[in-house]
Image (tube, rainbow, N blue to C red; front, side, top):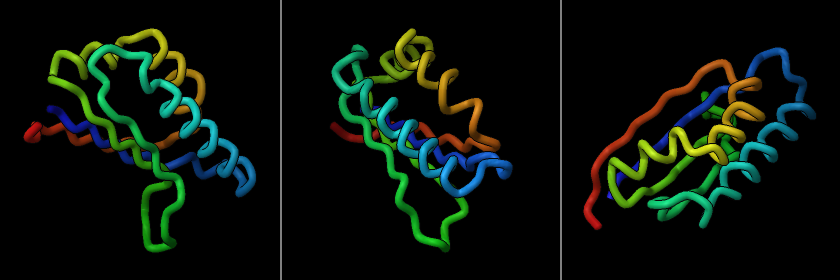
Length: 102
């Protein structure tokens, strides 16, 4: 299994209400990919963080293998969410992918 963890910071120019909507849209878009992409085992998005956090959104996803993760990266449904709501509204992205036991 492969874990794919992403942390994003939203753009500073977004107001409080805009940030709340963007977070909700990112969560709905990414979690909506469950069952849509081969090899995607689990996908969760966390948008409710404590004030001590320096990230706004976290993606926690699991794939069958590295090939499945690579397929996810270019899958049209994922690209639509990434290009439609994630990339236009985020200023930073940190990613960690790692192998885990089944």
